[in-house]
Image 1: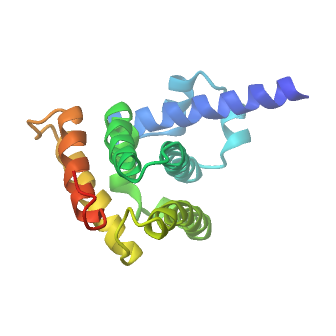
Image 2: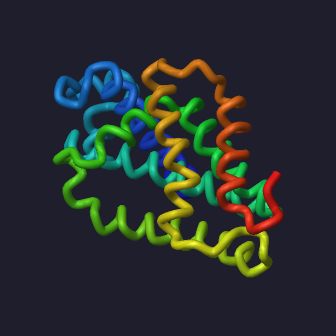
Amino acid sequence: MNAVHESSGERRRQILQAALSCFTERGFTETSMSHICERSGASVGSMYHHFRSKEQLAAAVYMDGIVQYQQGLLGALEGEAEADRGVRAIIAFHLRWVAANPEWARFLFRMRHESFMTGTDDEFSRLNREFVLGISQWFARHVKAGGIRKMAWDMYVAILLGPCQEFARMYLAGKTVSSIDAAVDELSRTAWNSLAAAGETK
C-alpha cells in the first residue's frame, strides 16, 4: 500500500512539474491536457485520476508552489537563533528560491487572480495565516529579547519582502545587473538596519 501511495504521489509531482513547464512555454490558454500528458509521460487515465480539469491542475500547481515556498522559508528562519541572521535567512531564501525556481516564481507572480484560482480562497487564506503566524512568532521572540524593533506586522513584511519582490521581478525579466549573492548582501544589510533595535545595527 505504501509503495502504491508513493508511486501515486510521484506521478502527481511529475504531472505538476510538466504542467508548469507547459504553462510557461505555451501559456495557460494554449496548453491542453494532452500536452501535459505528453510532457509528463502520464496516461490520460492517470491524468484525470489526479486532476479533473486543466483549471484544477493549474490551481494545484499554484498552491503547490506556495506550500513549497512557505515551508522552505519557515524552515530557513527557524534554523537561525540570532536576529540578524534570521533577517538575512528570509531574504536569502526568497531570492535564491526565485533563482532556483524561475518558472514557479513567474507563475506565482502572475496567476494569483486568474479564474482557475476560484475555489482556493479558503485554503490560500489558511496557508497564509499559518505562514504569518510562524514568522510572527519568530519576530516576537526577538522583539521580546530586545534585538528587533517592535512594529506592526505589515511593516515587517514591507521592509523584508518589498525590496525582495521588486528585485525578483527585475531578475525574472532579465533586467538586473547585480548577482543574487550581491542582492542578498545589500538587501539583508539594509533590512537589518531598518529592523534592528537601537544599537544593534551593523
